Length: 111
Image (cartoon, rainbow, N blue to C red; front, side, top):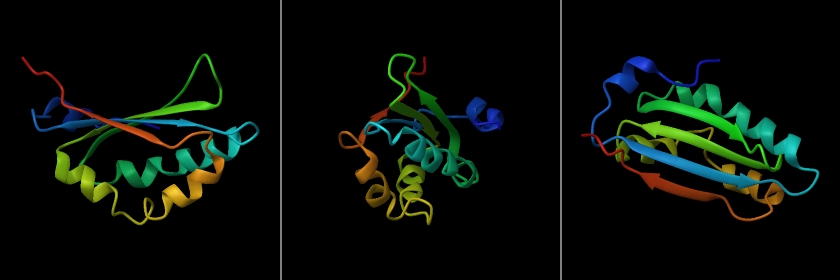
């Protein structure tokens, strides 16, 4: 499955937002967490403001996941959190997580 819209990526602007989401599953909950996370990919990629939504699993700890997301702007990211596949997501994730979900926002430095 392609997780990056190359055309949108090539046309991104300084207002693009990169969101990194870090999650650590409780012992024995890795597969359940991974399934929920993978199910988010298709509907998220279909959102008009999404450029990339790339899942990662740590090479050092199989319970640690990271999503590398790229959005056309802050408004698109805020709209993402209002989508049906995102509503109540935290309530589904919390029982599976060792620690709270960590979200970090970045702007790319474009020269």
